[in-house]
Image (cartoon, rainbow, N blue to C red):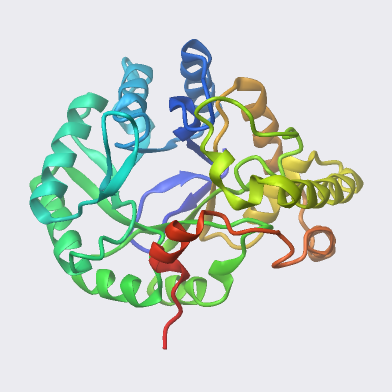
Length: 332
């Protein structure tokens, strides 16, 4: 497995990480046995970075990962956990809480569900507008000092917030959506993370399956993509046309659409680690094939011609969520 270092102060991780969200109902029903087998297959293939959130399935995802890791050497895996998103008993999203006491409580519950004595990378899933980022990161820094957390990360925050967080404690990585179809981080954020020596863990590299070459429609019960503008009506059809253009460009390179999309992200810099949301072993095997791609500048350019920057139709989240994203705000 090829390895990459997360930022100046972070751990060595596999060049591709496994994002486990889809194993807990976010894209519709998932097969528990296949999910566990996929996590095991990822570890056996040399993937050591597994990303989760305490709100994925309201704890289900952490329990699943904890079960999968039983009997495995602790140093074989780097577990990244997001916290702060609040959900009701019906699964509804009801806000965000990143107050220091809430941070420490969330960490205690995550450790219990995961069955671990420490979390490798702990990060707020979003910026809590009611809590200074310094307070949130300070609380995670307390957990680092106490040995419950090894490293601190960020997720979906903008340049100013990154700088403020890094002034409190070293930040190893920023988790953010970055793909051929979502290239917003290139405008400002990548420059700041590189200046500060912070890595990027890129999620949504297949744009939630939109450019992965397997999607035709979104109809499964519980699949949140049905609420995403990119997956609705005419937007979906126009975006799937981009996926077909990527298929053609990828074929010329001997790659499937998913492999081409992942290989493009890998080619954007050694400081970037794509997270693949495979929840089946066959999709995981396909994703791993991207590591063998030879991405010369002309190959990268060919993929960018197939899926030009800002070619996607529709935002990645509904309007209310987009408005709340600190990462979408530009510095003055």
